Amino acid sequence: MAKRKKPEDRPDDNLENGNESEDSFGLPDIEYKPLNEGKGEVSDDSYSSSAEEATPFANTPQEERYVYEPPVDEKSNAPLVIGLVIGAVIIVAGFLIYSYVYKPAKEKEKKEIADKRAADEAQAKRDNEARLVREQEEARKRAIADSIAIANAKPETGTIQRLNERTRRYYVVITAGIDDDLMMDYAKKLSKEGVSTKIIPPFGKTKFYRLAIADRETYALAQANADEVKAKYGNEVWVVRY
Image (cartoon, rainbow, N blue to C red; front, side, top):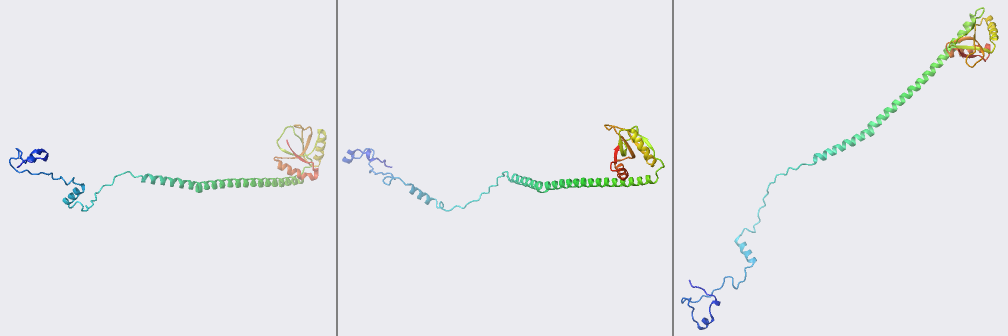
């Protein structure tokens, strides 16, 4: 193989003289040029074209592959949301039931109890008033019957009694006076007519003696008896408890 020499390695005088160098060994000179000399640098496009020609399947569409990825097990908030919604519904339902069912029912019950109590009290008052009226009427009738019995069965002479201590009974008084002798005289007069009497001494702030023709256990009976004898002894007849 012949050894190549660069042009710059050859001295000009050799060219001019046409003499060969000592290293040529008598072989003709070969002009050497680099492969890429005069062609410039290879462009990227040329390289790309060459690459594409070299790989004929480079531009062929590749088939998409589906890779299965298992779902990530994440904690769901659904139970919490459902629980909150159910709790809110229960609270609202409870409020509505309390406001529109329980509370009106309790108020109605209280009103019914109050109305019943008022009705019972009114009925009891009416019953008590009716009972008092019946008692007064019965007392009046008994007093009339007693007066009639006394009038029909009066003794020939009445008794005279002087009271010395209080008896807590109700007396029918027909007259009063300061002098007890005058009371005794009037009592003797009535005794002759068959009327029994009782002389009540002064007591409390009163300084008068009183002459009674009857006594009863209750004020109603005594007052009924007093009403009966007013026709005989005048309207000044009254009842005194002694």
